[in-house]
Length: 226
Image (cartoon, rainbow, N blue to C red; front, side, top):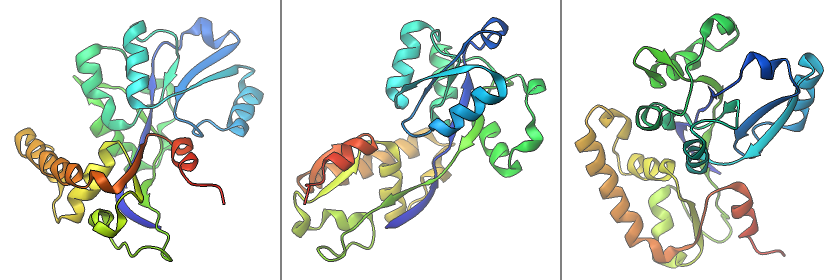
């Protein structure tokens, strides 16, 4: 497996967790698959006596659901950190975090600082770090030689690759081309131009993609059963 060092931080965002709900029976979470495991739910229930209801989703689906309800229907949302301030600015679907009710000393300081910097809008903090990781590339080295992302566009791999239809893939291709998209965040015009360049590369490479996937299950289901 080849990995590239773009951290993917899943943030916890407050929605409508009221005192009445805290005293009631259920905490409603909308999150990605596998990010709220059964043992965590059991530990939370044991400590608080509150049941947990998890709705599985992804960034865009999550935002669509919350826009449709005006942020109602859930107590906690867990989008990626880059889908928080822009969404809040446009749609106002999140509630700010009340840090007086958070044990901030229990967070890893550097990770907390990153999330605070990226999810603060008009003086309000809208998220706290929950988990992070890297996107990776999996290669069957017996069948293909792939050293970096541009290699998936080799002619001999036509119809034999799959990619995730999400921004981290664009970022990975940009880094592989020697660019630093993070350095362009303060220049929307330059950043958009870079993403257009990467998009053009992926469009030209489209014959190599057997399918596009959005989650783990779609990827695993795309592999033939031997």
